[in-house]
Amino acid sequence: MRADAVFEGGGVKAIGFVGAVAELERNGYTWERVAGTSGGGVVAALLAAGYRAHEMRNLLNAFSFRNLMAPTVWHRFGRVGVAFRFWWRLGQYSGQYLEEWTGQVLKQKGICTFGDLPAGKLRLVASDVTNGRMVVLPDDLPQYGIDPQRFPIARAVRMSGSLPFYFDPVVLTVGRRRVLFVDGGLLSNFPVWLFDVEGVPRWPTFGFRIVSKNEGQARTVTGPLSYVKALIQTMLEAHDKRHVEEADAVRTIFIPDCGIRTTQFDLTDADKEKLYQAGVEAARRFLARWNFERYVRVYRADSMLV
Image (cartoon, rainbow, N blue to C red; front, side, top):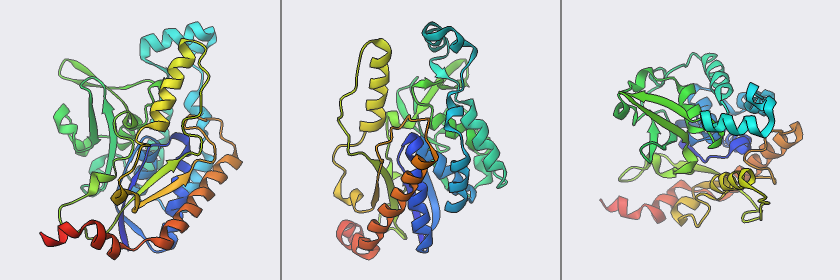
């Protein structure tokens, strides 16, 4: 059975997506097109390259999230050094590790650029903060004078996952201008509409979302630094958490976050396993009630009349 998949941003919690994907694959689903934002973009890129859920599980279990926040020379000088680096680079950490790791993992499947994939196979969402707009990669790259076929997927993954304040923006030079890109969740954390078409769809598009029981929980703010962190956490964890349209909710797998924060980079093996199993169970509950024909009849009836 064929399906498209759209993964919400979730930072380290994206491991839960892998559990859900594993359950769907066990039930016979294969992936035509995939898309994602931030941590969901990593999962989407691996699926597009041909990785199966069990392979992704092994990769992410071995992945050291702490390496994303490896100290730089500026961190030797404490908060003053961190503040100076942020002023200079607009981030506390480079984000280079994510790009390098993704590039190495994709290369094992013979994939480097978007041109190595079938057209339309993968879409990643980033935020262009210079021009104030959402960007879909690779579709929008020609607007920046860039050939999508030659653009590295690992760089796009980094663009989509450059959490503001934590990681440096990715900078592209367009003519004489520098254009800055950050986490796609800043503008669209759950673009489940990316693969929607007019008329009756040939196969379903499944959304994958992380949900929290602690939404709205108070955060401690004691000064400028904690204020900025609270601001970013609010953006990452509350964006698009308002009411989801029913037509989208019925095709979305909602995965509990197990009390884990988006930026909890010190995940233990037990944390990873909890997230994975939460994804498995969420997918089982979803499949028990999912019916594509009913979805088309109830939510795409207007399309059937065209």
